Length: 117
Image 1: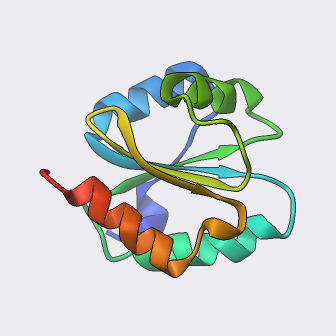
Image 2 (image 1 turned 60 degrees about the vertical axis):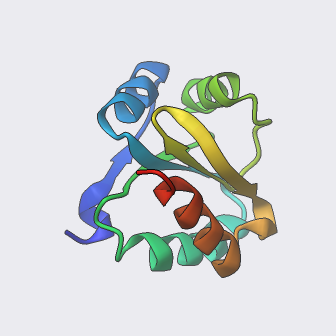
Image 3 (image 1 turned 45 degrees about the horizontal axis):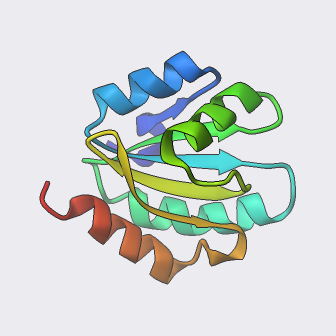
């Protein structure tokens, strides 16, 4: 199943909780409005597309600030955008933001979320 069919848009804290509960291994991408978002999403797509075991939740930060703030509260990771957070069993295991979302970082994140799963 291609990545586009494994994406959920998360707009509320309840949707974040449901996504994390339904996906023992999952990834949340916080999308902002600046040019960094599409440029970093290229790496996200390239590394998650072949991984059918990983679902992707996308939070459009401007429209869904409550969902974004909820993720920050759950993880203790200060909000940035763009931001990628890998989860295993509802706990964050890897994160990067802004220009640190690179091909190498995505490889690290996939490895972190795959460990022990």
